[in-house]
Length: 204
Image 1: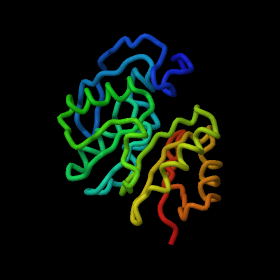
Image 2: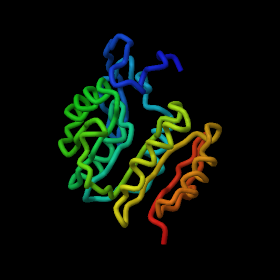
Image 3: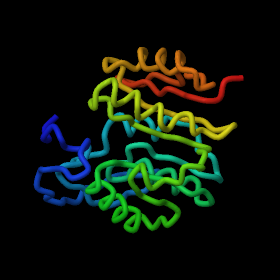
Image 4: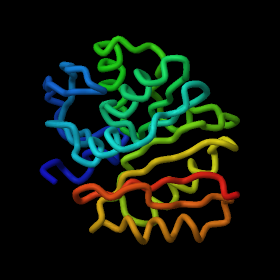
């Protein structure tokens, strides 16, 4: 990784912002979006995110949808475009990323998305769809705490899709989720290039 180690794990990244514009294809539409140093994958659409956007089934058309670790917003924008009648929540600890994501939602012309820090999501919300390219590099304990906080908030018929690199522990993460007492089952939906998409839903 070219960024300083605090780059997207910190609420206030120490690196200078240095905003830039990139051309990105989101859900079949070419957009000029704003990124900056101190956020995840500032120079391009991350390959794992691209795999998730291409390979995940359509999100719920209504209800509450969660982009966990939204960064500058490509997953949230896709959810918002595919499910215009739903409310999308783009959640991140990185305030710089949240500001950029809000700018990008405006540029993309979507108004059904709320970008906020985790504590600002109402505690009683349950999510009909969760999509995430989870921050594997925060370390196993922090990653597990993140998933433990959010995956159990799936609605009864809700489904989560996570994209994880094969060599960064996708199979062990699948086993770990299945070992938790959350009433959830994790299966492998697909394997593309260096990535797997994991699917999580309520156990039958």
